[in-house]
Amino acid sequence: MRYDCIIIGGGVIGCATAYTLAHCQLRTLLVEAENDVAMGTTRANSAIVHAGYDAIPGSAMARTNIRGNELMEGLCRRLDVRFERIGSLVLGFSEDDLSTLKKLYERGVKNGVRGLALLDREQTLEKEPNLAANVTGSLYAPTTGIVDPWGLALAMAQVAARNGVEFAFSSPVTAITRKENGFFVTAGGQTYDTRTVVNAAGVYSDIIHGMIGGDSFHITPDRGAYYVLDKSQGKLVSHVIFQCPTEKGKGVLVSSTVHGNLIVGPDAVPQTDRTDVAATAESLDYIRRTALLSVPGINFRENIRNFAGIRARGTPDFIIGPSPVDPRFINLAGIQSPGLTAAPAIAQEAAAWLRMAGLKLEERDDFIDGRTHIEFRRQPREVQARMIRENPAYGRVICRCETITEGEILDALHAPLPPRTVDGVKRRCGTGMGRCQGGFCGPRVHEILARELGVAMWEIEKDRPGSQIALGETKEADV
Ligand SMILES: Cc1cc2nc3c(=O)[nH]c(=O)nc-3n(C[C@H](O)[C@H](O)[C@H](O)COP(=O)(O)OP(=O)(O)OC[C@H]3O[C@@H](n4cnc5c(N)ncnc54)[C@H](O)[C@@H]3O)c2cc1C
Image (cartoon, rainbow, N blue to C red; front, side, top):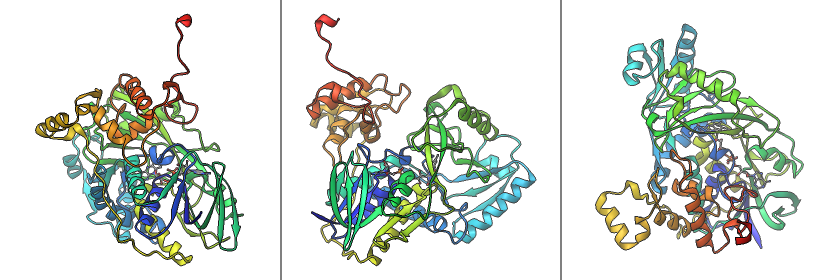
């Protein structure tokens, strides 16, 4: 079996590449170390579609940020992914900040960001009455948006799968051998033959590159933690609220999410461990204190979850292009923020590089684009009544906080790339994302999964391997 392309990594970058290549007459395989897509940085970030005023003009970051932002709305509409263009404000609190805002404005104009405006104090407070009273001005960017990051990656992967892209989960790549007409890629105990490779392995992309002898970049992990607050706080601001960026990054933001919560974070903590996603007390304390400088009324007692994600730092710009070792090996590496925003544009550039490497990218005439994601709670009453009549499973509410029905879980289980874990259901349907964080619905999702997959309860994992919730059957004698 010979592939035209093997994509390593099923984050938003790998999934966007799979979606783009699915349009062409190619044999493509995506190999992912974890048991689902979007298990790395793609599931743990701010979920902002950045406008593009931060990146240095002329950089790959600037180019793909602007293009990705332009592509995002249409892509999300086609794939039924939640996206809202709510705009953003970068706040200034001092004379120094105002000059930073001016520089950002000029950089944004150079990058081609549309609609940027410098606002004075009154204009800023008119847009956002809950800001700190000592704000002195802001940079307004109407093209900033918010998106469902794992929903986006999953939707692109599902459409790719429906159009013939193959997916191998729980298949960590352990070796790559170069040969005359391509590569042998060993993953999950199998060896695959391929003409080209796309390296979209996130914080591990330097290690993957090293497998063919590449040492042109090194990734330094950098952790950012968050608060997610209950929906009671979700409407405190109506734009994404940033502070002035520092050399550490875009700083602590406050924003509503597409799910109606308030997200607050991140910080930036360099580390050596690529797997340590602890949201430490120290990080959370810093984030809380910093966010209150922008929006003093945030009620942190309404916190429902904390998490952290790892940035693939270490390179000043995104690395998009062929490895110096082999032109058929395309690196999509060092994709830190705004990688989520840039993903659709990065994927297009990856396809162009694959063409340069000799792949024929002929469009398929039978490609089926688009995807529908039915959310029961968002349907009008009469549609809900019809859905329940046609399938009573829509009448059984499994997640009370978010009003997610059994029918939606069954839909996910019968869609391409079905979930195998309780958190896989969460990412597809939204169960466990509400105030009780799965305390009520978790066991019921667990039961449905075991029933539908035809396996014992103790075979179902919550998330990663080894996260079984049940260990075995209790016998009467044990009770
Ligand atoms: C704190 C934080 C905040 C951010 N905020 C934003 C934001 O608001 N907006 C924005 O645009 N961007 C943001 N980003 C950046 C964005 O999240 C990333 O650029 C994007 O998710 C990177 O996607 P990826 O596919 O490259 O990496 P990942 O999502 O990490 O995917 C890489 C995949 O490769 C797999 N993999 C690794 N090694 C192997 C192997 N050996 N074999 C097989 N598979 C392997 C991993 O399991 C993983 O699934 C943020 C990042 C962080 C950390």
